Length: 325
Image (cartoon, rainbow, N blue to C red; front, side, top):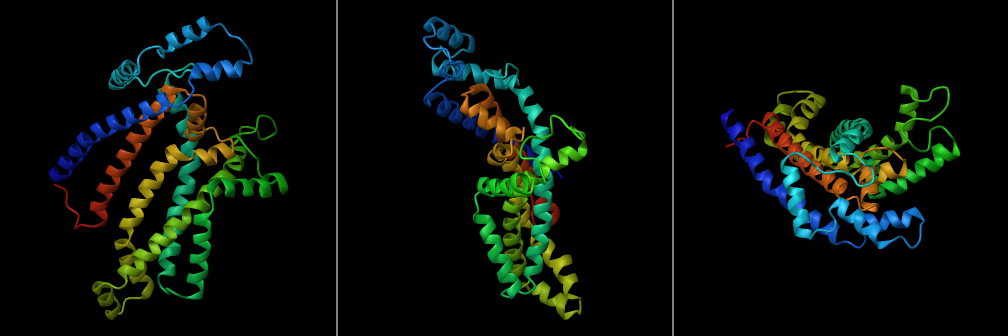
């Protein structure tokens, strides 16, 4: 237990310079990119010949008139105090914007991620019983095709078929603005189905392939041969002993997937108009909302580091051979 505590403390200390480097890198990249929030706002206003004094006043209000290094120092000092800044275009604190959008993203990714992990792992383990069979070849080929399909293309195809063609599900948003069931749980589930299905279909092949390869490797180990010689049933050997020892790669990928989906489901949320953190990221980049972009990146970094730490701890419970010092 003391070894685990020391390991967690060391990982947290190691994360501090990593987060600092991520903040500095992204701050510089976005600030040296062409365009700025004032030019976007002026272009979107539709007003020609705006007085340069007005533009300079806006830059001064947002601190964009200061040298880049000074802007970076001001931003870092705010992050240390827990202040992620103020969104230029949403006129509210960045932390408030993030907290408003995270629940919608969690509602989108958690069902699809859990389903893809469970279904993909079970299918992969089952295929490992008969590697090279017709079923194994068919499922492996189909999963490879799904894995290669761009997520936005798959989302558009599902929209065309089920929303615009068959009209079974809504095409965008999280709830309907009007109607008998507007705002109800049923209405929300109908809006949730297509984007969740899109994520599920693109993620489940990863776990099928990972579980299949891991279980096939474990089934060749000597202890599995011993269990078979003792007369244990094939399913008991597969799911009780082989699958548990083959879960480590699956846990790693699951952790990376959850971290990515929480902050990176940009394409799916944009295609389906889902009001989550991914769509907010796209809008912030498009509008050059520097504080919001940077705040999302800081949040993303903390999420990724926290998830990798949790994955490492789960390792110790799945494999007693893993020791922390």
